[in-house]
Length: 222
Image: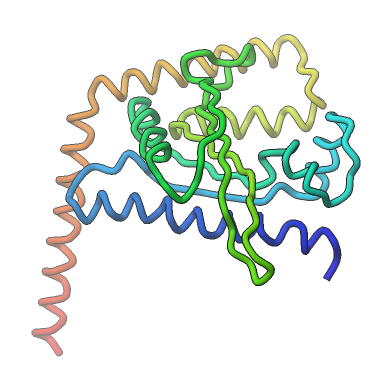
């Protein structure tokens, strides 16, 4: 096994464990018949090419080391998607209250969006991973955003690679306008939140009732 595989092992373990735990929070809300502030969760370990780019930007040696892990605190990355803007604060508070990780820094790009229009709430955490060689403290980043914010960020990320971070003015202006449009959509959806959630609950009940009817008919015919 190579040095990088050994180095990144605890990060992969951390991402896998945190995905299960964060998804478990969503399940708990569902079991309590309460609307979950978490829509879905994704996670990844930063690819070596991205680690190399980030290390170069920070003038760090591109080699597995404790220093590299401390300086690049987003090698392990989790992303939590929410339906509504208000849910972001709820999820952030739930994470702050947990005892299995420690929040060391937060960056609020919701209230204070980046000049590009980017919006998200970032939480840098310390997370202990148990390995056969003992406990390893892994640094990671949790991003919390709405579905609309995530759509915009995914497009901006792709364009960033194409233009190497230097956008033509027309693209830059359109991205900023799109970011504002996405945020207005989030605000509009929040204003009719209760109607949306009532409709979703009704739809879920309807589906469950339909499934029961289908199973009952199948049992009668068998």
